[in-house]
Image (cartoon, rainbow, N blue to C red):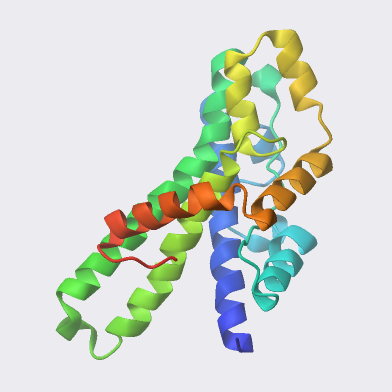
Length: 216
């Protein structure tokens, strides 16, 4: 895999995780919390969102090592649940906004692929390059929400499930060390235990959205 391909992968992943984090901030702002806005995080400027390890080094390493998984993150957008209009219902809503933004990008990418495949003559020989790029965009934006909704702290799924937990259990659950949670997630994915379950789901979603299998 050459440098240009790695660069494109990292750019697409970085764009996707930034959209993910901005969506969290916008949802929180909509529900009354202006913390992200005051911190200057409601912007697509990558400089304020990049986490050196999670946004660049880790994705590049996973691509270079040809691992069966890839994952990335940007700096989490800050939010103050106390400022939310109804924290009990708004916290899961804010948490779900990130994965939903990736699903929107996936749907949009699938639509573009379908249009290009239906009218390739309109794209002057670039149809293949366009479908490959948006195929990558589609795949990444299916993988990110699927993994993010796994209920392991600090992933978004862990915050969503707290809505259904008694308060005391929810607090203890969210206090689990986030690095421990990421380590557990990485081991599960790399071992193939979880990947065997989610890979067919990802392939199904990609096929439905684009009209052609692009993954696995």
